[in-house]
Amino acid sequence: PQGIEQHDAKVYGKEPPGTPPMTVPHLDTRYIDGERTLLFGPFANVGPKFLKHGSNLDLFKSIKPYNITTLLASAVKNLPLIKYSFDQVIMTKEGCMNHLRTFYPEARDEDWQVYTAGKRVQVIKDTE
Image (cartoon, rainbow, N blue to C red):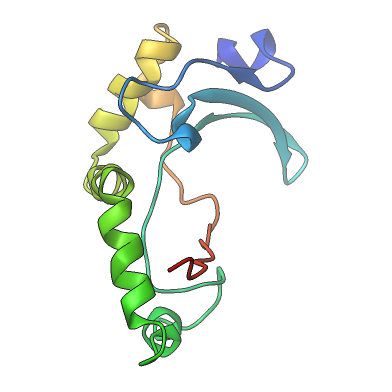
């Protein structure tokens, strides 16, 4: 696709209004298996594993009687992030492409695939 030749770095846009700071759209040139590719993000995915090849029980094993209050308080304080994450999980490829086109209008569906690129785990500290 033409976009790969046009971008040789990470190019940032502006985060959409009312979204968490980690939602800044960006194009990123990477080499994957020796082939030059162009990635667009961010799109979030939610799951119970803490590592890419972790256990589906990781999240549940981390909940203890002494930290349940902190986890619930953190959830209440971060409802916009939770809503954003949920909206990302249910987003279709069409939704991803529409989001991409606000940043890169020439993007064609047949040139792009949706992949889960990695994991992010949030550390929560009890601050009372």
